[in-house]
Amino acid sequence: NAGVTQTPKFQVLKTGQSMTLQCAQDMNHEYMSWYRQDPGMGLRLIHYSVGAGITDQGEVPNGYNVSRSTTEDFPLRLLSAAPSQTSVYFCASSSKGQGAGYEQYFGPGTRLTVT
Amino acid sequence: AQKVTQAQTEISVVEKEDVTLDCVYETRDTTYYLFWYKQPPSGELVFLIRRNSFDEQNEISGRYSWNFQKSTSSFNFTITASQVVDSAVYFCALNDYKLSFGAGTTVTVRA
Image 1 (cartoon, rainbow over the protein chains, first blue to last red):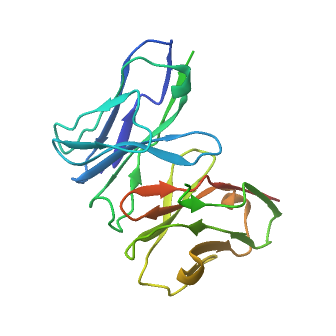
Image 2 (image 1 turned 120 degrees about the horizontal axis):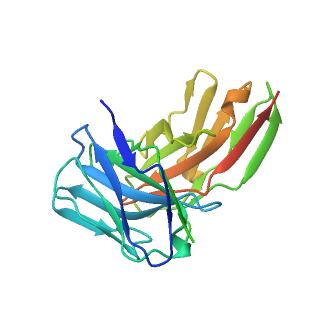
């Protein structure tokens, strides 16, 4: 199993550009989520999905869109990049939804810089 | 309000010293789960341990041990006889209805 994969690993965008961060998992996990990691702030939840066709907002959803058309894929879209979105982005999956005691499996991360 | 507080931002020790990382959490739920994750310099996030709110039994796994005290809402983590490879950022996390992470503690172990 590849686990959770993310592409790209690094990306530089100009302010106002859009892009999609890709995330895929091959563990048949129901629950997938996106986090951003900023210095001194831990990981903050952006959006999550409890299954195909179901998504919801996390703690910091503004400026990001998600969709979940398949169990395997959960892309994160930046509609109009801003310097405040410079961060490291992690995708994660787990076999059960929120409130459950299943550990999250994290992807390797995408380092995004917006100039 | 911060749900998970890791009071120590950075800890630096010499190899073979013990290191204890503090974690205090806040929740109104009676059922919840607590986690510790490790993020080495390579950047990936590695799951270390999970505890549910009904299991206050402390655990030792090799050089790692965890102390869960519901009465004080604390879930502390100790590395015994630290090694250079333990250098990493350690995150405490709470999952009640949503997974919340602490800000992380950077541990540096010097040879």
